[in-house]
Image (tube, rainbow over all chains, first blue to last red):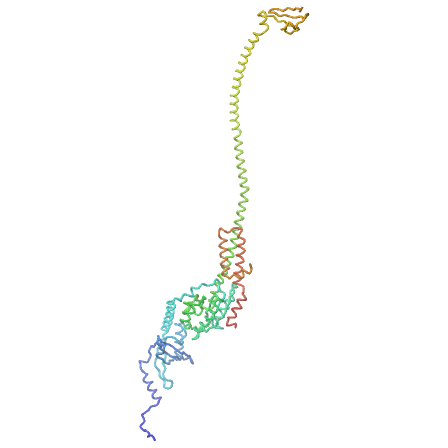
Length: 438
Length: 71
């Protein structure tokens, strides 16, 4: 039988021990110290904020340190408001924070770090830094502008929508599209996804994959959320999601933030807008621009056709008016020519008459001369003839001693012509005698 | 003709339209081909406008099948 050991070590109660821990922690080195950590498992209960503070190995992601923490409700109201004002985000899990902590040990509940202040600037800087890192990576991989460089279809009408089913933002978007004042028709299909919380990235990527499988049916993708005031955009600052959007084969419009909030998606999407309504307006704008262009083209066609017709009519009118004018012009020219000829006639006539008269004068002179010459010649011929006549005249013969015998008034040249009893008359130089033939 | 027009996509129709308007504005356009150009361009304009403002029931049905809200 084992011997009962009565000399047991002195022990104290747990309460007392915890009391000692509590007293040990009552030290300046663990009181009101600014600590950098990552938030996890943030829960609000009865106004108090319970969370875990973590430190992870930046390379492996392994947890290096961990502590429970609390922000009492009296302080949390102010701190959470201030945090939201500066960062635009609610105080939540997965954030890098700089918090003012004091180690607090409660005998009953154990160790807790009590947070009395938060430096939101640190978180803001970290968010920006994280965003910058993602953007740098997308840039170095050469994919950051790929979606922006896609060519938009003439009019995007077939739209794949990624949004939370039943979300106010989705409703706004659909209303805006279907009630557009231009009568433009849009065709939408909703691919629902979680738009906040840890499932945001995988569910949006899954929706993109579904759309990608039906790429030919759509002109563009619209990723929208909104309507609520508590926007938690942190979920969208994710490399995988941004890389998916950047390399998506259709142009993506994101409308997930507010004016002040920018996520990595805003840097990679083809178009970024502030709200779902603005996303609808963007699409309506593209459609109405196309309609305006059509109206412009209609006017162009009509005015060109009208111009052509009026130009042709003008040409025709010109030609038809030119014909009589040309005819008139020709007639006038002919008339003037005629007039000129007419006025020249007397002049020509006079000179012609003068010339003729002169010619006539010359001819008359020539006639006169010729006549005189002919007269003279004739006179001379007459004179010669006269001389000849004179020489040959019977009288002259009679004078030379010849006589002329006539019988019945005819000269007798042959005596045989005479018969007895004929009375003949003989003429001499002077006087005549009658004789009777025997 | 009607069938051929229906087969055109908006992009094809608007591209042809722009080309015709350009031809109409050029010196080559005569009163003889003006009427053909005008008729064709007005047909194309009608096609384009109807594609923007008239519901394509077939397309609507196909997309409704993908719409998770309507499934």
